[in-house]
Amino acid sequence: MNPLAFLETEVASMVAAGTLRWPRTFDSAQVPRARVDGREVINLCSNNYLGLAYHPRLRAAATAAIDRWGVGSGAARPIAGSLPLHGELERELARFKRVEAVLTYPSGFAVNAGTVAALLTKDDVVVSDELNHASIIDGCRLSGAEKKIYRHRDVGHCRALLAESRGARARLLVTDGVFSMDGDIAPLPALCEAAREHDAIMMVDDAHASGVLGRDGRGTVDHFGLHGAVHIQVGTLSKAFAGVGGFVAGSEALIRYLMNRSRPILFSTSLPPAVVASCLEVIRCLEEDPSLLTRLWSNTRSFKARLRSAGFDTGASETPITPIMIGDEDTAVRFSNELFNAGVFGLAIGFPTVPRGKARIRTIVTSAHTEDDLSEAADIIARVGRYFGLLSKDGDRP
Ligand SMILES: Cc1ncc(COP(=O)(O)O)c(C=O)c1O
Image (tube, rainbow, N blue to C red; front, side):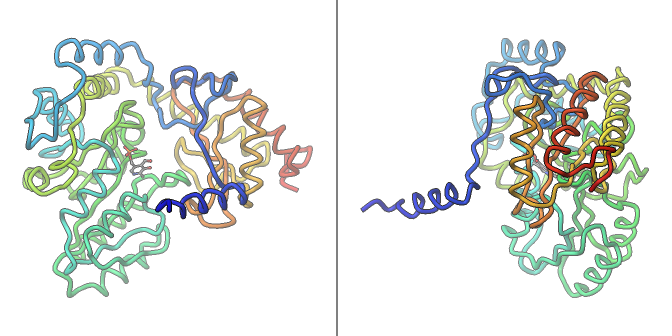
């Protein structure tokens, strides 16, 4: 008997329902006009916000680090030790984020899961936005803390849940800085105020704000001028920073504690030299070249305006993540396939990543897209929108 037979049944039912997915393959680097599955498409799928994934400065830094330090770091840091590069990146990130200390992790996912799980116990309460990232949800589950979920961006509801949890040993209020599927920004000033009033730990996951929001891309805390009000800032090195990995930024005590208690630090291999070196180069690029961010935001405004004037509903987005709201899951998948055939790579996102009936095409523009890329992409999207009956000829929603 095959003990994995239940998987075959599961996969067969996904095939029958048309929900089995397999990623497309890039035949080129992550560039605005990429070759994907043998076709040239305008790439609106990647989180490569600053267009740095194939940048010559980053490639040179990564190559030099490989020549000097090799390709791998050997093991987890408590076992194999750190490379000088790890310390250098952490000191630079701490200066950049204006905090006492930083600790890097193998992924942004591992930061959230590993931090929340290390800090909280079953005697604690975590108060979390309903649209927070899966890695925060997993961290909450691993910690055993009681979970209280507030309605999306609803500070009143959040306050009520904090008040309800007065007896807990510790309370953690956690939010995404920028929400990954909708592109809206957390109401951080009011959340920090609520956390302060209730003596809660304030944590922000800035995966989509690192290198995107705030001065030189310092994140949501800098964007709102809230330095000192957030105890734990999470960042990723996998999106605007163009590599892979994540980091937690906060007090010296927090970082020393996590180095000793956080399981992805204790039991997972540290970042390889090439990635650390290219991320150091990103900080230099951000501080030396303001045009990276200026272009990202002007592209964001221009693309949103094009989609809206065509008649699309782009939700509540305030950032380069721009959803094109479709509604029905099946239509969103067919829409995405049609877009791909017409020359635009925009991914369909449906349940369970977003609530049922709120399926969408999630688009992200980068600093590297040109006006030509964006106008051509918007024209193609509008053409497909009309074909699907989502837009009438004059650009209004039917
Ligand atoms: C809000 C948010 N947090 C954390 C992560 C995880 O980051 P990483 O890809 O570096 O593991 C993501 C990635 O999609 C994210 O969107």
